[in-house]
Length: 321
Image (cartoon, rainbow, N blue to C red; front, side, top):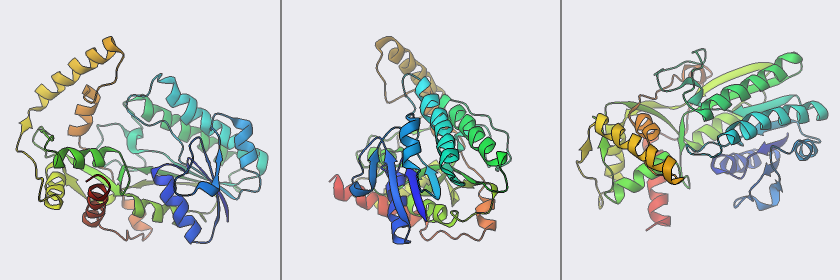
């Protein structure tokens, strides 16, 4: 299959391209950044450039879109919508122009917000930030494309939870780094549970969804079981015997007050701070999602969460001694 991976130079995209190549597909990357892993596959470009995206999809059988503005502090906030929603509109136009009948869109569990633990795919969409709202709107763009010629178009939408793995610089990496450097402080009791996913398992699942029949296919993705924050920290500590962590705890109310104070400082100074009220809420939220759909498909992750964490910690220690 001739596949274009939009946003294929990033963390998930790089691993996905590697696996697609192993499986014998012809793969091209369209990304604003060069690819360290697959430099010969890349065409540099921006999803906001509809002409460039249309040229990229010539001869394409399947387009996979991973491109997104996703950080908590993107400024201006309009970038979430320019890239995530505008990019979706450009991609479906490019697909229509080139007769591409198969799209895979990597969305996010952010579409559910923070108040729906164990959300299933049919749960109400209640995003609590601009990133989540932009993903909801992007999903709607793809759904309109898929249903316009339903008998000839296949759309797969994947809503992953927090994804971690070797080389990632996201939430789990930051947690590991804070624990090993003894800068970690538990906020609240740590009883709240988190759904997380190892990147290799997510990529494996994506590769099983390339031949879906016409219509819309929607899946949450998480590797089970869900760990509490306390359990996650304890597992990481066992992998960092020389570092460990302190027993320092900060009550949620106090941490949230500090977050609001940092919000005010950030607004006045125009600088982004590592602490914010949004990050405190997210840390203490119960962000589990249901993954019954992928289990009913019979998909079995090859790597356990414990092994995925061990690989991630080992990679971090090897590359950041």
